Amino acid sequence: MDPLLTLQNICYSYHTPDGETLALENISFTVDEGEFIAIVGPSGCGKSTLLNLICGLMKPQSGEIALHGEPVTHTRPEIGYMLQKDHLFEWRTVYRNILLGLEIQHKCTPENIARADALLETYGLASFKNSRPSQLSGGMRQRAALIRTLVLDPNLLLLDEPFSALDYQTRLSVCDDIGIIIKKEKKTAVLVTHDLSEAISTADRVIVLSKRPGKIRSIIPIKLDIEDRTPFRSRNAPNFKDYFNLIWKELNCHE
Ligand code: ADP
Ligand code: MG
Image: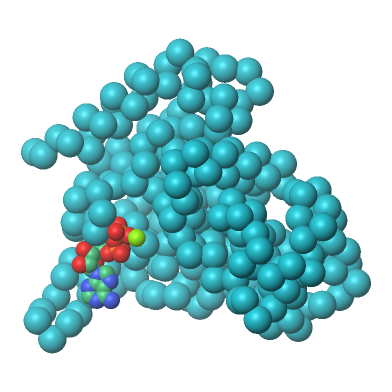
């Protein structure tokens, strides 16, 4: 099976009045359909830049990005993007927030509305349909933001540090929650995080980036000795700490 997403020799520089900043250098990897990829790397190494390139918001300076073998040259509806801030609008109810993407894309069809209702029901937000975002907990807000993205039925989900604004405990449970939802909905995901445990607990493969300019240090397949893997259970796998040590070393080697 061909990969869903292919990146080949991606380079990107920012140009400012002070000069040029090389942010990413020679990034190549593929993502298979249904795979969960986590990208880790120090702050400022180009992780958000990479997601912006994948979704077509920015164009690489050189190299190619393809989705289903077709070059990504503009933003595509089959790519969903979830950010650290949930960007829920307080002047809309939870339900109207969730329908926002459909409204913008003129896709408020009965099937899509039914999918929105079903997602709200399945993931425990149905009784909060008419609430305002401020009435939800941090974790529920992230879940609402994910549902808003899933309603558009994207093939590929990009998640940019979606849990980092949450306190530690909430973060663990929301990560578990969202990891389970993504697997259950059979979505392909690329999660950017600076949290190694989060990466190992959610991902099928972890891509480790060097500090800026971001280059790929290594791509590590995660095979945990555990049944019925969920992000939370993964943390108890006997070999979890081996991956942690391995990735820690990769991040901290400076040659
Ligand atoms: P990360 O998400 O890994 O923290 P970013 O992708 O946001 O990193 O940024 C990578 C590097 O590119 C940063 O070190 C920053 O200096 C530079 N950068 C990011 N955005 C801009 C911009 N709009 N203009 C100039 N430089 C930028
Ligand atoms: Mg970032």
